[in-house]
Length: 151
Image (cartoon, rainbow, N blue to C red; front, side):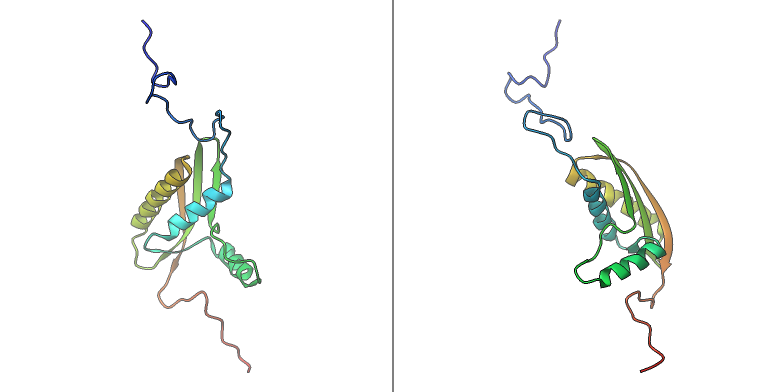
């Protein structure tokens, strides 16, 4: 006996939408790795206890890049991704505020990034690897220019 298929277009209410990144009658949708990087970076920065993303070197280059007129800021610093047809893997480099419990911050970042990426892109996040590279101490201000010895 043949079981009725839940994806039969001849029966109203049983057609499911074509999954993302699969060829359908209306076309194909692809999502750039840059999009996944930006969504991941923004979602990570939303979590309390995250001071910045990126290692010391990448933050230094980012600070230089921001000083160039017209270059703007980058939301992808400290974020690398691999994007496939239906899945993505994300690596994050974090700087955590001193006093924040690192494992709790990492857990909250992972949860927030997975939720944001899956909701916005419909890609399945298979892993979010987090490396905490530094702690931001109170009173440290990355944006303060060093005082000059001469006037």
